[in-house]
Length: 304
Image 1 (cartoon, rainbow, N blue to C red):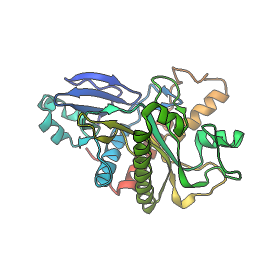
Image 2 (cartoon, rainbow, N blue to C red; image 1 turned 30 degrees about the vertical axis):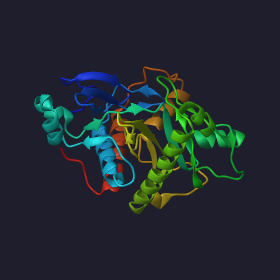
Image 3 (cartoon, rainbow, N blue to C red; image 1 turned 90 degrees about the vertical axis):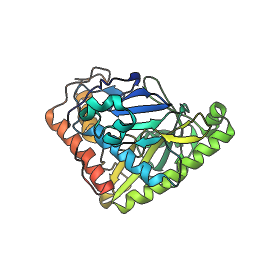
Image 4 (tube, helix red, strand yellow; image 1 turned 60 degrees about the vertical axis):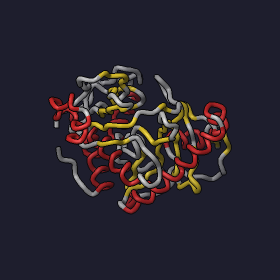
């Protein structure tokens, strides 16, 4: 599979995110193309991560198939041949879309990321350790880093166009979306996470936290969109080595974050773009983490 830092398809591109390029397809559909770009600390690296785009797309597709009875979603197909049958203009771009593209139903995106935390880690742990709160709301005392939260905490965030997303209270989410939509998105978020957490745990993976995005179709239906429980949108921990009270190893871009932390603490990077050039061993280690997460979760390997 070709490494891809940006796509160039014969469709109208309407958005480019840190990882995905979004194309317009007639009939109220979109084509999402997950490149091999990787970001950390909201900065996109110059070096791509081999097979990362395929891991994100096919992991999401696998989850959409598991969740079909639980929630409506936007996926039409993540199979290259099927996508070409729907969009013949892509016939000459089979290699470019193979594995990394998803044809989707178009919807209006709710401007909130629905974060749910089953374990106390990351920014949530840092705020709790300092103030005993999450998004300003008090949590019980005595919680441990990486400790399980029961029940999981629904912790919405605003979607930032640039810079960092911001954790907000559920009350603030109600002000933005209204009480009915807020209640439905929280209900769906909890149901999807519970299903995903249980399925992943059977396969030796703890999904410590994750985030979902939702949209509304022209017909008014709320649907699950974007990526679902991937190593980019979630913290995946190996269950066999789980020990609360400290940080956990993870199946994501942790080797990249760790290396960048060293560069920043050494004064070789100020945290802004451009990021320093990634050594080949960091690129390789990150790619292997993504592929291992996919293998453990789905029980199969990627081949295109």
